[in-house]
Amino acid sequence: MNEACTDQPGQSLSAKKHIAILLLFLLVSIIYTWPLVLNLRYVSEEDAVMFTHSFWWFKKALVSLNNPFYTDYIFYPEGVSLAFQASTFSNFLLTLPFNLLFSESVAVNIAFMLTYILAAYFTFLLAHRLTRSIPASLLAGIIFSFSPYHFVHGVDHLNLSTFQWLPLYLLFLYNLFISPARKWSICAGLSLGIIILTDHFLTINAFLLTVLLFVTVAAHTLASHREERWKHVRRLLGHGTVLFITACLASGFYLYQVVRMRLQTPDMLKFDIFGRGGANMFSGDLAGYLLPPPYHPIFGGHLANNGINGEQIAFLGFIPLALALVALVRYRANRTVIVIATLSILFWILSFGVSLHVNGVWQWDGTTYKLPFYYLTDLPVIGEVRTPVRFILITYLGIALLSAYALSWISGRIGTRRGVVMASSLIFMGVLVEYLPAYPYKVVKSNVPAIYGKIALDSEPYTLLELPLSRWYGIYKNGSESPSHLMSYQPIHNKKICNGLVTRATPDLLQFKHEILNALTELTTYEHYQVTGAEKRRATQREVLEVRAMGYRMSSGWGQFIGRYNIKYILIHPPISYEGSMTRAFVESVCGMQPQMLNNDGVVFYRVGR
Image (cartoon, rainbow, N blue to C red; front, side, top):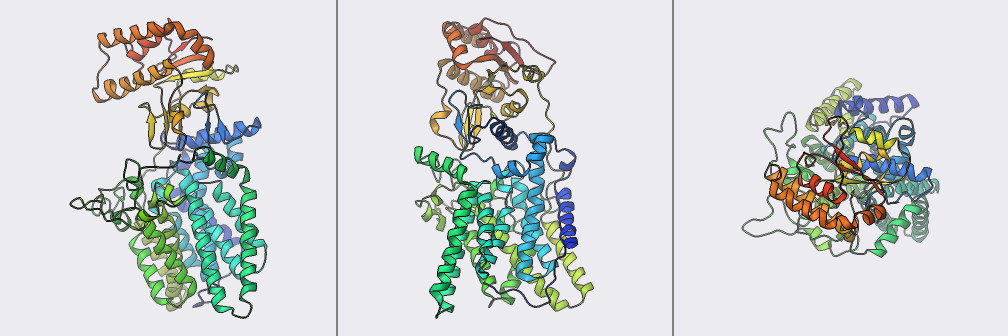
């Protein structure tokens, strides 16, 4: 695997060139995420809230010397393990100065911007190691970093957007395979450790790539070094051992939390393949790969793939695919190109998931065409992958590297510097146009209810009971309202809450352990989802009287409940905080108090004491 493109002289990289390349990728990143750079204090109110909350909790845990991968500040009083939470601990460490100087939201947005810049830069370094061509390597960085896959996941899936460590890891692996220096094993191990601290699915991708590459190189070594082949294989195994030990040391404490939780709950990651939220729902779609996404500002209304879900939007691009084919034809005898192409195709096949999907259709007259991934679902770890479409990330990287080979060959055929610059610029612009994101990038400026400012001034430790009441994890829910927006206020008030949202947890944590909490969950879910939601009405007098009666029956245990959960405030949020709501009627009957309101933000609260 030590063959590089040699159709033109190698182009060295000075410090000035490195800086210029980083600035170029920074500029494209700002354009692609505009106007995010002007709104770093805000994140969307969807999954991105989990990351601001995680950054807040990690900082709080480290300052107080607590375990950052366990918290009882949500899901109180049971608490919840964060071992399988999509929290990207690596991003927290990377942006800690911004977290300390500004806020969690600024740190999350900086981390997201860095995913674009560093993914492009590290892919550039990898491609340059292979092709020795600066224009070709720039193209590789653009294709891998500014792809629709990156835009679709965005800051809401920061863990999945943080794939910049993958090309860096492969760069160190490549050096490891062609050099006896032990430093490359250590560097590869450190980068793999960072990947482990970033995301579970990226770790699975890296693990599969590592196994496949080591097997490929070992097989090549046995075939080509007949006299000292076992010496070379032992050296390769030594590199692998150092890599593995270094990765474990770099992520050891976190890995311990993961293994511990897996042993306690071995079936936690099991899903129904063809059920709601299962692997079939998140299998790759042929239209999603070959047609521009619906949000595309130019082609979205013409070649739109309207029958697929957001996860299946992974347009590979006409120009990158064409360039990849050129590389395959021109460098069909190059072992490195063959390995890259083979792995790209293999992961593309895996990304199609359990059954064939074409523009949202996966059954034809009741017939389902099962694909290779379906037959791997009984294997450990692989069988727990709920979103096989995400394997397409490796295909993007492979296409980016193959495109670099193709442009390197094209540049060699052109010959003149001016011609190379013009051809490269046209290809760059063509790819960027194909990969155009939706404009403007989504920025949500939310208002913080005034009561949280008052609570923040109170240093006494206690719990907030926030309504609607709900607990969510993965695809399973208890309660109608996502707890994410309630969690977003926690860095402000610094109090524990009974609600919570995590990406993975044990099923028993969804259930509340007190009859009053169970009653509030059912009541607030009904009023929010059915009354104010589906029926778009307010509670009737009869409904209010019924819940008041229920509240009176439970009032005898109110004092014990408040003491057990250490509750000082009850907060009711819109749309169930209106005067005459069933939720307010129940709370007032069970605690015997009248609500208060600060400003006109729609949040009513009760200071119930303890």
